[in-house]
Length: 229
Length: 299
Image (cartoon, rainbow over all chains, first blue to last red; front, side, top):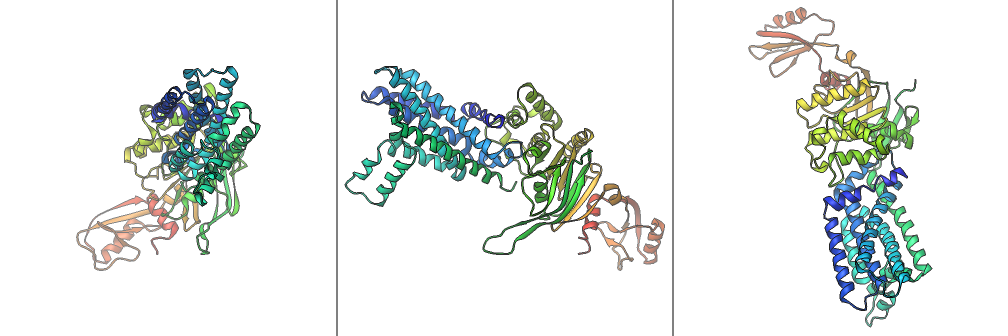
């Protein structure tokens, strides 16, 4: 466990010494403005969107930079393991995203329908952050930050709608069908909103992606670590 | 007493694409390193030095043979606490200072005050105090090499492997790092360093391992390899014909004396009517000894 927690200090370093802090601040500000400007905004959707987008930014900043990917082979020369590195980076990325969710929740003070909805929305945002950071982590380890950009756009523009919305379009073909399949299978905002109301399927879906994501990230770390030094 | 590093019958090949024959990186290597011993792995580029170090560090598994670090198989996790490896090419996480990088690595070894002590000791041994607040990823090569050394000596390392630690360094830094390695060896740590350019390592190393085309062709104490004498003769005019056993140099001719006396060799020069301006006897350099051992000059 010490080797897992050994990865966490990367997060404060990146928050202070890279643009990660600025990007997370901008994200929180935009979503705060959105929540205030749209009277019908769903607190759960805002929390999940915040958690997922912040998770993408944190995962990209913690593992997607070319220098960081090259340094993984050096990291494995210390008494640690690929699994510990993957789990540690996931923990760091998730905790960064969860902090953004908490800050936004505190600044918005969502409680029009009582404490249950409030805490449920926060929980949904945090669980969604965990699932997305695991998936994006393995993505950036394999393909670099280009994968993070695609994931950010996908989560922001597409994943807010359920797959039925794509299937129901008048002109649908292979692209819309593939998109709908990805929305159904992969981490998505529309699905994790349900966590706020206690949907066990959504929780299980997120837990599955956390496990699969960390396993694939472990493979990604081992692959980068085996590079010639 | 357990031997810090032991390698027996190592062989390692690499696959090439499109069903081509496998490349043999290490054909046969057997050696061991004692406590406090500094050994130098010498060989030309692509001789297999980095592969051999990677096998010793447990980064790679050999196709045949075994490596033990203090009696533990090198690829097992506990061995990684005991063996440190400084690769040739530096790569550090972006945005971290030198102290952050050492502290980040030390977290895998210990926590709390013990970790602080590890960081302090490693930075002190590598001579990094002056650059502790600088960003690691943008360090100049000499400081980056020191940082790699600090990461390699962290914790309770009994064996330290250094891949080309002097490449690209100025003479002052080479000497300084050499002295730090001697201090490390004096504490009982076995040091194995590789070099494709062994100039100036004579004073540092106890043992020389000569690697040629993936095969360890010579493992010998440096004193045995460097014991040979060379007679250098500078000439007024270029020779028409070389005396037997002599070879040309930029300033004249030279020969390995072996059991011959300098006077006898000079007499051979006079017999060939060479205009001798001056002469001196010197000991063989590590580079020459390595060339002899690998039989490269003969080729």
